[in-house]
Image (cartoon, rainbow, N blue to C red; front, side):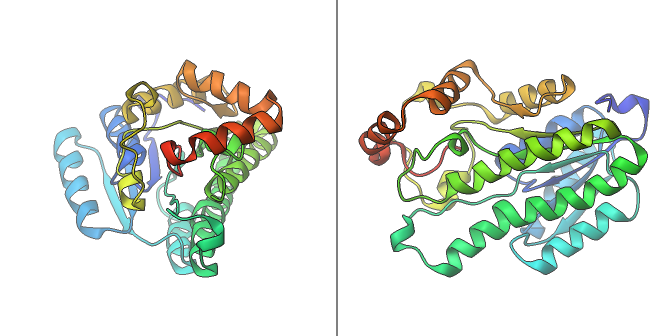
Length: 269
């Protein structure tokens, strides 16, 4: 797959497109000349963003207002991936975290997290890969997290959902390669977005050096996709952190998690 939109009428579909990493993907791809299909729950923000990007870049901007934690919301986006103008890049960015440990959570809240972070990613990836593999052209970026490489947030199930996203993307990416299609997990660390605020997570004590810019995360993700990587971990400091999470003794990781859980909050995206 080529990332150069000049070679064809390239179109990207982005979920969670109005904020954070999703908005950074949206603005970068529009500036690069891609046509866009933007998916989010907030119809008003979608309309404003589409008008801004259409006026600035002169590209086709479609919008779909959908709650991907529901079957109906997923079905709407699945139909768009199957019908209409071909989608050459899918960015599964929509996701949530819960600002409470599992023992104080509810089955309803945990099920919603899994439906959005896991079930929607699976459904939309499958819907996108069918036409992509038939054309032998296309790519999927599933936004995961460095949190998925270890149980670094005691009591939180967010990291478990992101571990699934990363493993799923690596596995499916290997099977899609012979068809000329790429699937990659994007695993950022702490990134300046609305994500923590929306979840009610206090990140005020997180050291400044740990934060990434969403625009930098997107730049590195697209570079790594172009290189054919199955997993992208932006920034050297988080590459080092992931190496530690993969190879450090479990007892050490558990001790670090206990010491830092009050300071770092319950999310790493």
